[in-house]
Image 1 (cartoon, rainbow, N blue to C red):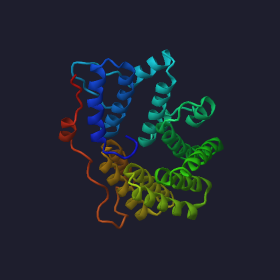
Image 2 (cartoon, rainbow, N blue to C red):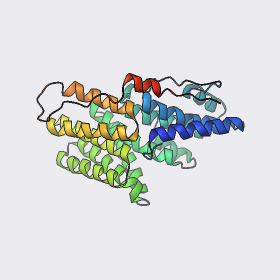
Image 3 (cartoon, rainbow, N blue to C red):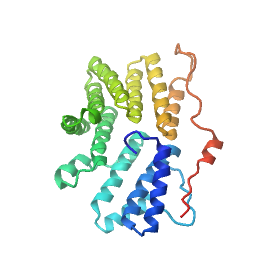
Length: 284
C-alpha cells in the first residue's frame, strides 16, 4: 500500500485476502487486513467514503481500534494510529492529528519494527514541519528534526528505500528554517530520487510540497507546474481523492490567468459515473 503499488490492485487483493481470512475464521488477521482495505478505499474515494459490504459486516476503523485497545493489542492499535497520521497528512486534516508521537512510541516501547511504523515516522516528520510553519511553534520543528534523524539512520541500510525520504525531510527542514536556496535544491533532488526509485506516491508528495514552497515565495508559474505534476503522480498511484484535493488547491490559487501556462488546473480526477462504478463491495 505504501510502496507506491497501484491502489486498485491493493484494494482488490485486500478484498480477496479478507474473504480468505473470514472463511478460515482468522479474526485478528481479518482485522489487520481490514485496516489496509479501508485506507486504500479512503485514498481512492475520500476519507469519508462509505464502504458497501455484501452479506458480511466489515468493521470500521473506529471499531477495530476500540477492540484492539480493549484487548491490549498494541501493534494493531498503533498501526491504526499510524494509518490515521498518514491519511490525515495526505488529506491535510491537521485538526484531526494526534499529539502522540510515533517515534516516541518506537523508542520507548520497542515493538517489533514493522515497515509501516518507519514510514509513519517519515510522515510524522513531514506533518511536524508543516505544522511548525503554520504555528511557528518550535516543538514541531524539534519533532521534525527527530524524525529526520531516525530516517537518516535507516537510509544507511537502504538508500533505495529511504534516500528520497531523507531529501524531502531535509527540504522541509530547510524551508521551515528559512534556508530557501538549500530547500529548493533538496526538493528537486527528492523528486529525482523518488522517480528513480519508483515511489510514485512519494514523488507526488514531493511535487506538492515543492509547489507550496514556490507558492509561498510568490513563484506562481513554478508552483503551478509542480502542483500539476503532483496531481498526475497521485492519479497514477490511484489516489484519486488525494489528486482531487490538490486540484482544489490549484483551483483556489490559480483561478485567475496570471500564470503563463495554457491551462489553469487539471480536469476532475474522475466523474460521478466513474465513482459509482467503483463502489466497493465485499461479497463473502
